[in-house]
Image (cartoon, rainbow, N blue to C red):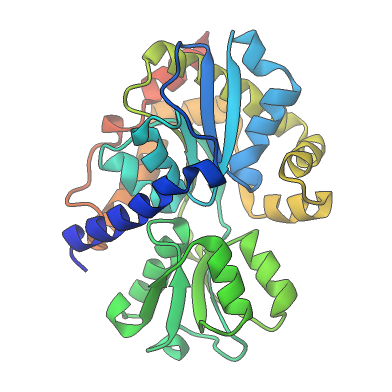
Length: 327
């Protein structure tokens, strides 16, 4: 699939999504000042835990900010909302990192390393070869799309070898459970929901098996001020260190925010590797974070989601992250 084709397809998805933002998230115009923060997130441990902590610990108020949070189904929709002025900030998984890499947003902080993504198959479909010619549901442009492409590449296959069907995550869950698709590129906790309905499903491929690092991140709209970004980064860093020191309490806060059981939140968190702010700042300074992003960028180029692999400093504000950490 050509880059232009992918972009046209994503634009079509975004155009439909924008019309439904009033249903799935809080809409509105641009912030009147630098004290209100419109923050999007995905309803999982990665996307919600720091926001839950920041609210409970009063971290926004300490920076003179008021946060308004909105739930979204995936990262690409949040990037569109950023560009439409409906959000100031959002959360994305590794599969959506090609969007800031293409200039559509700025990464202001790395959140976690996630290993929640899988290609799953109906009972008995254990390999990618078993899925050849089969219907595979995937939220395009997300980490579910990413793991599908990784698995196809490893098996010596391409998207032409399967019937790839673009679906939002909730539709993947219902379609797989109903047997309307044979496989999916999807992620936990959605997979946990599917397993409850199809307990014999096969985990055909996993990001765990690759040995690579898959960073999640918080992104800012390109027009948001550096002053505001610095304050938000500070909130995220303080929440991150509290999460690192209080994992059990974080699971409870996240479960409350997402209205799920603590057992569900704990299972979700089991696919995540958290890092302290000290560690993230050190890895930013050493270039290790850049190496993670550069490797993802090379993958996106191979899959024609990017024309070229930019320098991570073009879209990851690591200097501001380190500066906020030092203050």
